Image 1: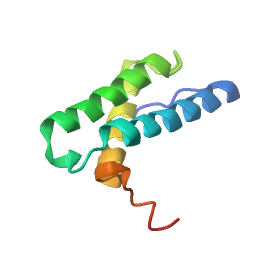
Image 2: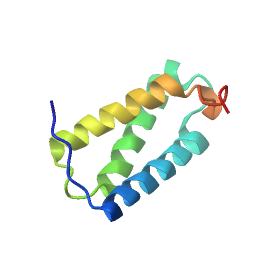
Image 3: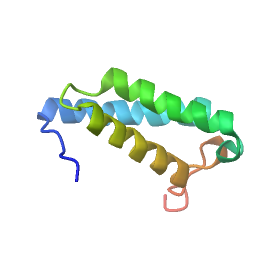
Length: 93
């Protein structure tokens, strides 16, 4: 099991802020119709996640934790968001 970084309250708030912004960028720009069926679109989603998290995560996230978080974020987006930003959460809202 990979250890989780110890973050200050300010760092935790910043990570949450970055994740919300990342989701908005993905929904607005990358989650196109049938994106899960297109290699280029999947690559762009993955690349966007990696770029944003690399620039924004606190130093407490070493390379191993960073890679794990990028993988988890991509899997979550892939499983939860269809084309045009539609999500499994819309049904519960």
